Image (cartoon, rainbow, N blue to C red; front, side, top):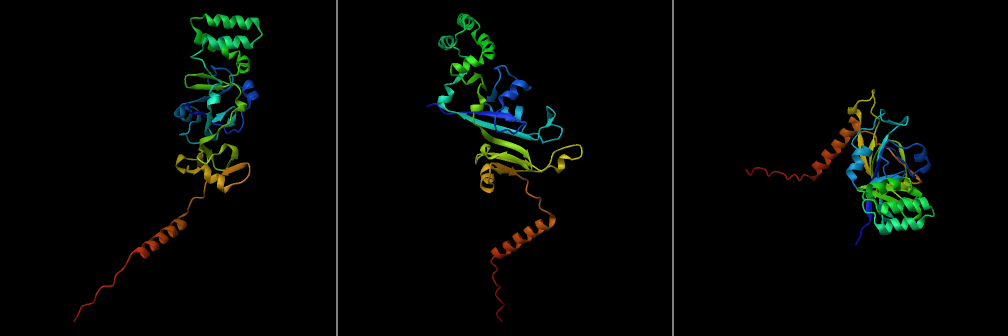
Length: 259
């Protein structure tokens, strides 16, 4: 039985919706070999390390398009069996798929291009190049996603639903409730690393989504680093533990000498 397909998207940005027009006007610095869309991967570690940079300390020096990147977000989505039928694998372009595309278009020029692909000895690379400039036709034919090995590009990402799998954010960050699931893992960092802030003063703590969902209400959830315990609080806690330990010890009276 075919299972749901789990995909990951790593980013240094926190966003709830995909802005397709923004991507068209300001293409990102990553690869777009499958065309314009939202890119995901089956390889979780790649999304974490290469794109989300989860292991990095959040810093004021991280900037993209003149905006500070103060988060490391690993998004997750699942594609149902029906959804997977709308995924076009570029490594397996059959004659039936090319003919299906021919029957979808009214353009004689496009029909001729597809006919040439039917007889091409290099169908995979030729079709991959062709598909980048014919995404509208692919969508008309019922495809919403292009696949190349472990990379998936959604042609209509605005229809995609995702949530946060893991994240590292600055204390005080607000996260849309819609992105949080009970199993989401959120690491909170107390402050940003900068030339005036040493790495030794950076603290982090982890909370689960179920904790945020139970403590907060409303559409936005605020994640806040708990206050650091001072020396007085630490000594008080230590004393309470010591007293509790003494209560648990059973002291038996010694028997006196018999004269």
